[in-house]
Length: 326
Image 1: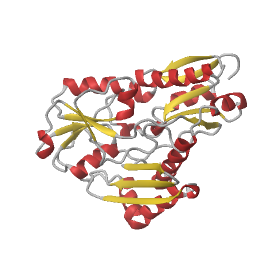
Image 2: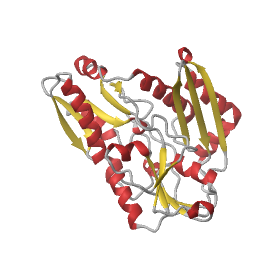
Image 3: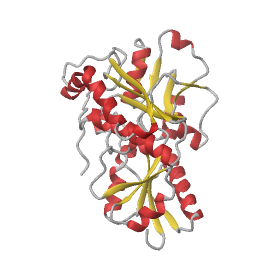
Image 4: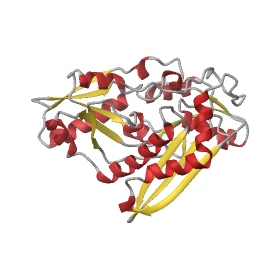
């Protein structure tokens, strides 16, 4: 950042809340800033499931380009939206203290459907697979758009509920009375965390933003994203991961599902905190050695005859493999 630093962000209410949070923290440290809002492809193309677009980078690519072109100095993201491999020249500058990691089900006041048939909405492969694993007879429909748009779509349709990240709704005061915590659902790697990225050669911006870093959140999200990166191999899949500090130890839970939720491979381990650096890698290798390699191969094959639950609506093509962001 030179003179007044330019903070890049998506233009949704949640993204702007996150950017303003970073701006206030930097202003409090004496840095002058301004916010530059852009619309990402993920916000523009709302008629296709995220994995048809290529989940990895769909919300961050526009800001990456803006930063590389010098239009913004730093960018603020929901960390779970950020690819595990950043574009060349862009680096992670800070991870802010993590918020709520839970997924929640927002419903319409009646939970009877949990004991019978029902329809829930989500645009996430991970949430879809975990829901089908627990409720195999339910229908899952695709739900796209920013948090506000998704909440409105839930009200406008006859679905029983929709799954959201608790942190996003809490940050902009949209969390309704009718919700339940899905504490059985393993969150996305880095869910609830905000990350600030900068150009590798911009020493001033990197040093300024580094003052916002929370070391506990940095360590836990590193473990989760290392787990994700090791499993993915260039393709996206239903993967959940959560690392938490428990006194001087770190508890890690990780899971890989088939798209239809029928197959589930999970790991759980507690280690001394000083052994954190390769934990995500080793946990991913454990999953790969216990059927995960074959499951990932099945997902990547994307065979035309891939069988999904009868409740699937509008998810007609599974273009799972993702192009690298260059």
